[in-house]
Image (cartoon, rainbow, N blue to C red; front, side, top):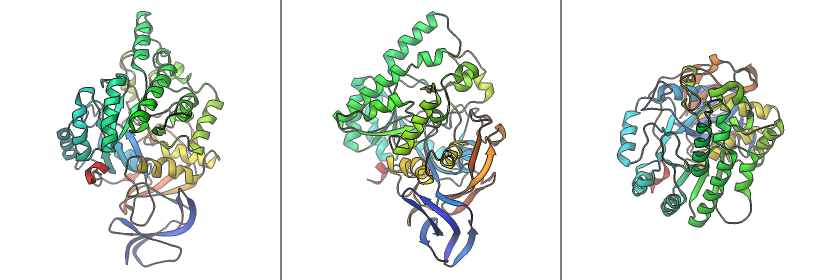
Length: 447
């Protein structure tokens, strides 16, 4: 007899939809059946979509560091409530650069998570010799900057080539933030010299050219070295064009975020620090946003992540536009934004699963255990009311941020229940206590 049966729902996977019953034993999916089977507990999901739990692979929970902005108990509460069952986290303020850092963080987080989590390390130009040990210790990927940001030093082309050679030899993977250091530093100096402190400095400082130049260099070095690379938060059709241009074989995977599919570039002039993130929003028209949604639909964007890096309104009001933190909250709202896109015909529900569950899990070697609704996968499931119409408000944001750039946005589709390894962890706003989430070692730990 199975431990749990979720019956009469419409199961949605990347390769199709069908009315199936999902059966769980010992935390894993044990059977998918079109007929009823015996189970100790049954949940009737008639009228609901049954999807794999979402996998958000680009999350900053600031823990341990400045937890006034976010921490694991609250950030993973937001995740569970929104249908995300696995996150991959790294924080810039307390970077993991050595294996000892990773082990200390795993110990620290033992009772702090409400969903499962993997951990990323920061690549540091003078710590490349630690990469192999970190990979075998269980990190999920290495975060790399091509410009100094958040106090993390940027890699120049020479350092990046050396890192990519190591990554290729290990068959590891890098998540690369692409903005060119020479361009951003020169523009910053010019803007500061001119006494500029208005919000318009952000798109001028983090100019599109800086992203395009860095993308070109990273793509070329990935091709030369054979390294597997995920490009973080690709912001525009122009950036996508650099990555999809012919010539040179590179193992490049494209990540983007909801902010680049929904927000306009000029919002920062009105909202100021509440739209300070980098790369900044690029869209100058609805047509630009439509082009990004089309890229998400047709596969040029491989997967979606939040780049969840929240600050409260108080944090965002502290200091000049130069001083306030970069970043937006996103864990609460990303699945609703994608479900709404499906309801509006911009994506299929199958593509939502590919973008926010199967794709990211596969990119980082977490599949098929995570992000998949298959026999043998962890029983991480989310039940979706695809007909639910609601408006996002500050009260819906469970992150410590307490606000969202999507406040006031009407959406259709909402997670109503979330299961982690077969256990109900979130139900209509009520979320399990910290401690249910477990560390998920990266693929290097299994080799």
